[in-house]
Image (cartoon, rainbow, N blue to C red; front, top):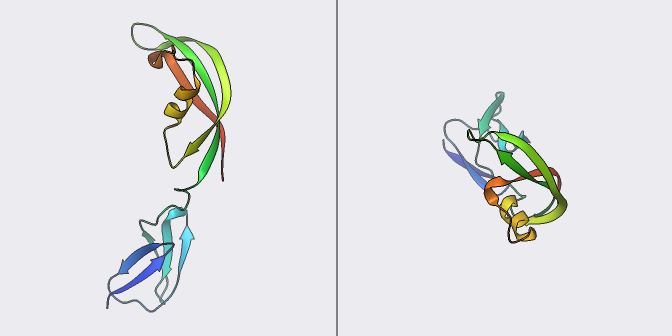
Length: 119
């Protein structure tokens, strides 16, 4: 018997015997436990992440690095620390680049996330 169930906006198709049961989140939005009446079966599903449309405030630090001929970092200089707003999974690098001086060298600029808050 085949049944489908919608869980957090995603339809999950079950094949074989299914006795009703329930679904509960396990490790975030990509995994769930499904009860089939005779025990628990762990399954991986493609459940949509509900944070896709949320805004994120990110504190970043910007450094300029010097590299040797093997592309290894030999020294670094702190440039600035700032908060940026990142929407819908946009690249932090692009958002921060917009805030930097126009003459920055992307090959020698390193951007590191310090902390973030999702709203």
